[in-house]
Image 1 (cartoon, helix red, strand yellow):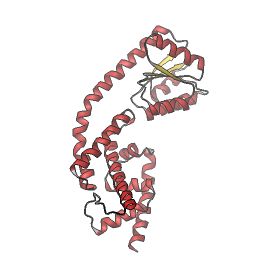
Image 2 (tube, helix red, strand yellow):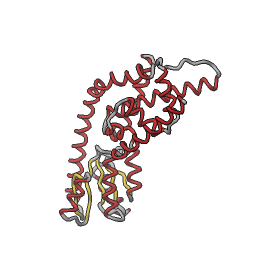
Image 3 (cartoon, one colour):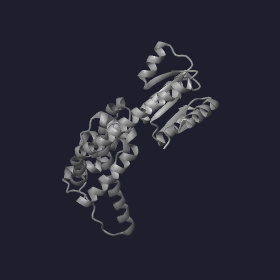
Image 4 (cartoon, one colour):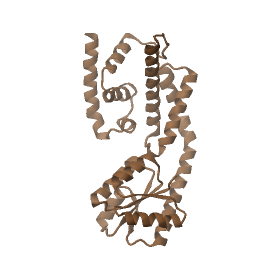
Length: 282
């Protein structure tokens, strides 16, 4: 795993800095624009990101800081700049830059700063690893309730689904801001995917396959039928907020939707659901 991502719109600077880091036994990769950097951050966790403020424009460098905070909130960022006044430095820190380094960079100062940031990330990661047991205990009951009570899966099936959710979480944990909500939403999604898979299997084989669905009242069946007629986003919002009672912050973390849009989208989703239920009853 690469440990440091170097971002600068000058390929010569990227090559020079990554070579210098290599001499000091620090693994590094480079990107020459914000789009490439964002794609790399989305695929891999970089504990430290060393990024130039001006990537074609200064605003592009600022936007990259926003993307890093969204895609990899546990990464620590050092911003390089040829000149930054007090107001610019304040804006950089507000948007996630832990350190502002002024060009030309002194090799000893840069290496010392990066090593210190790496050590801080490693210490935080070790603490986070210790928290996994606590997170597991804190979520176990809720995750079992989703799989067994809501969707009717057996004990063994539930164990497999929860294990699959944890594997996904460990792969993506560096970008997950609300682990409990994320795990709950992921288990629910895995349950629905498994039910849909079995339904497709039954349709292909023509055989009757018992689906792990809990007994439903007439009103519950009407609700499920109404939900099935909604688009994916509206159905997810109705389930997460109306049925599972998640907060808007948790729904934003689970779906990736901006927090400010959750309320208006949910209101529209409820209207669609009422119309769908009305059609079912009619």
